Amino acid sequence: MAKSKNDGLGSVVLVGALMQVIAILSSPTGLLYSAGIGFWSTATVKAAANGASNANSGDPQIDRNTSDVDVVATTRAGASDRTTIGINLNGIADWSPQWPFVDVFKTSREWLSQREGAGWEEGGSLKLRPDGWVASLQPSQFAETIMMTGNHFPTGKYTLLYEGDGKIAFRYENAKIVSQSPGKMIVEVTPDDAGIFLQIRETNPNNPIRNIRFIMPGFENTYQTQPFHPIFLERLSKFKAIRFMDWMATNDSNVANWSDRSTPNSRTQSGENGVALEHMIQLANQLKIEPWFTLPAKASDDYVRRFATLVRDRLDPSLKVHIEYSNEVWNSQFSQAHYAAEKGTALGLDSNSYTASLRYYSQRSVEIFKIWESVFGSSSKSRLVKVLAGQAENPWTAEEILSWKDAYKQADVYAIAPYFDGHQDTDKDGASDLDDPDHIDAALKMTPDQIVADLMADIPNEVKTMVEKNANVATKQFGLNMVAYEGGPHLTSHKFGDKEPQVTKLYTEVNRHPGMRQVYKAYLDQWKASGGKLFNQFNDVYPPSKWGNWGALEYQNQDINTAPKYLGLMDFINANPSR
Image (cartoon, rainbow, N blue to C red; front, side, top):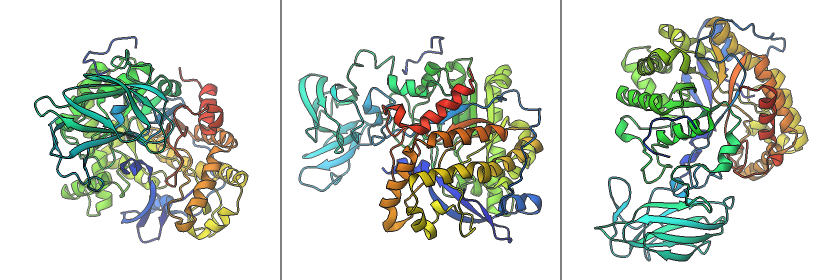
């Protein structure tokens, strides 16, 4: 387990988990609710650290004799006192092998401007309507988008529906138009690595092509009222909570006003403003799973109030709502950390910009909590779970965030991300050998069996120590339950230069190893024994790559018997029922 390091001069090195930014590589009925329903990066910042808290965050030695935490009985009304399992959803993208929507046009990219005879995306300025649809085309210009990439999608006859007048075509033979009539096409799709590219070749400026839907086989009659794919729903059905951080495109978000948000009628749900809140509420209602929302860092009070009001009016009233301000505001890799530092410094919260950022995060979180409480009124104590979060490897951040203006009194839980990445640390520099370029040659000589054993050894040592240090602050010192906003194995290979392909192959084999099921059992059992409550896996579906093996599943319809991490999660859920 890689650690934060203190050089004794108050310089804290933050090792940021940046997997969430990788997505940048690139029914809405209007009714009220009715029943029936990271990259890893190292950034050095100066922190006002002193006393025991600084020693805690910077201590490079592991106390092998750390005892179990004595859990304080006083916990907030909104927080569950049981250990349960939730999950983060991967972001919406054409390259994601997740199948959230049966209308796959919702996962399409923004329009690409193309021109006959020109280079890729050299079509010139593309004229769009305010709602994002193509308003008109110049001579020889055409608009193009990618809807699906990869071969883990259903084969068969897709139904394409649209409004307006024009000509639609497909770039490759993997999508063949077998019949068409005004406003409708039947398209035979055979997914492959080339991707499914849709083109608007002609459009009538007086009646432009718009409202395109590309519906998977068998759902053309139900997609409006049942927008989610049944396999997507089934694979999520046993979880306690869904964290929508990537669906909300929280990291580096510029959403500030209610008018900035995506709606169910937005051209795509994969844009920089995230997925429509209506879709998130409908998913939570249909599954009867608690939503965890991460409000944008720049969100205005009006945005927060309107967001809370829509949730109050449409979410199943039996479900609790988890509220978090942004994501990893302690992590300087993300723009929200810089935004908080600027705001905190401008308000004079501390002369040190990093400390000022943590304090701004703390007090802005409380402001947001109070808005939600005002919207939910008398039900707020039973329905709202107000989250303050900090860096797992640096419990000093917990002390700073929770103590600032007694913010802990307004919160229900404290959240961390207790990732694990191996026990062996040959040079004692705080980085696991599996994550250390100086020791990757030795790691490459290990077998998957040996690496799984090394991960298993991490659990009762570094992971246990990390979790219990945070529990000592959150629970013993401030009386808050401790939860995990993210967690799981953290094996990435992007920083290993020309050895990257070998390391990626090895780490993919490790994540597929049957022994990972037992690693998860030990991991989650340790989390529970150390006082942890709700644990959110990061994430649901994600393909193996040099950026990591984050998914419990590699693709949506994977045989779960070949998915040991997913099986490990189900094992714990079955042994610790929450419903």
